[in-house]
Length: 307
Ligand code: CP
Ligand code: NVA
Image 1 (spheres, rainbow, N blue to C red):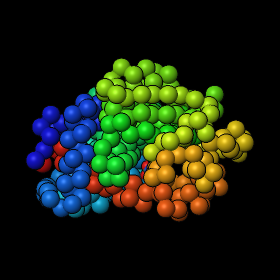
Image 2: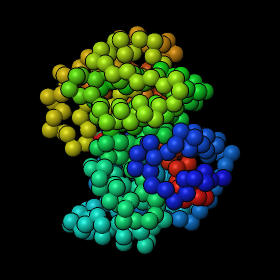
Image 3: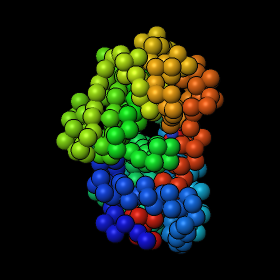
């Protein structure tokens, strides 16, 4: 059942998958969701989260329990991690107890240190650079709605952040037309754009703009995220006027394809990056998207554990 090439690997970024592996994980996610496949295991997943989480924590836990495995919540406040035990030591110790470890942290380099010092698979459960697990669920949700990814036009609006980075990379790998509308000073990391262009599948497009209306013209997927990510809370108020015209609302939606879907990784700030009408309206697929976190991450666990 497993995707052989992924067994034992680390997934620290969405481009740690090849295009074929990404497609295979998405297919497995849909087979797990439908019940066509029901793998079982007796493995232990550790969750070491330096930042808050509802969806990632609970969807990983539910997925692992459904697989028959166990989950250990290694919150820094109840482990020696919070008292400054080095990652190099923590990683080697956890490696001896666990079968797989998901880490939510700030610096991508810290994830790399976990991966370097632990032999078990390490999963990026969100860093300041990327959120690959989120994008698995997003791509699954888009495919469910359009029965394809290649050629689909997606517009990301708002801050060029971790979610935007993984979405740009994943979209490019799947041959999607990715438009990114941000204020000039909040564009995605140029290194991510260069990487996305280098690994883009045939037909993929990546367009950066500061014009939100042009960016959503005829688009099939509108996607947004918070304007200030975890760790940037003190910047939130100052950003509101800068990002206001990038808000996903009914007016902006009227420029999109009539069958466009609206996605948000959640948690959402209604009235800021998205209106209540847009998130609760008929175009919204955010609850399916949140559910798919569980199926997509189950597929990831099955693949990395070689079940
Ligand atoms: N979308 C997402 O990762 O949500 P959490 O922060 O609740 O895990
Ligand atoms: N960009 C957000 C995503 C939260 C799931 C953050 O990093 O806080």
